[in-house]
Length: 107
Image: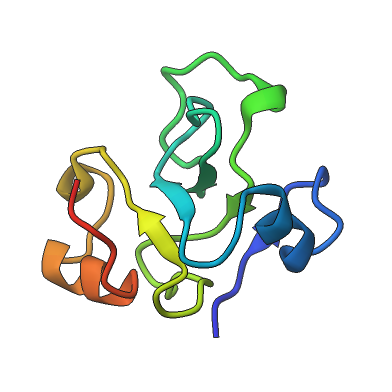
């Protein structure tokens, strides 16, 4: 089970999922900082965003440590995964991160 904190704009995890589509079609952005693309669920711990402009309106939807927590999504619920260079944003080996991401498509 994942430990995470939802941004205050979401009343519950279920409400967040409903806001971004249906299972199987969700798009996520791991390590988004304050640069979350429209239509994506953003996940970050905001530990390395000192070089970014703080934009509360575009803050991550889920605050969590991607280095030691499994992603909180059901298997096969995410259609589009991250497009960032993941090895630069996490201490996990890339294969482990993708396995934990429930077979997300590689970007």
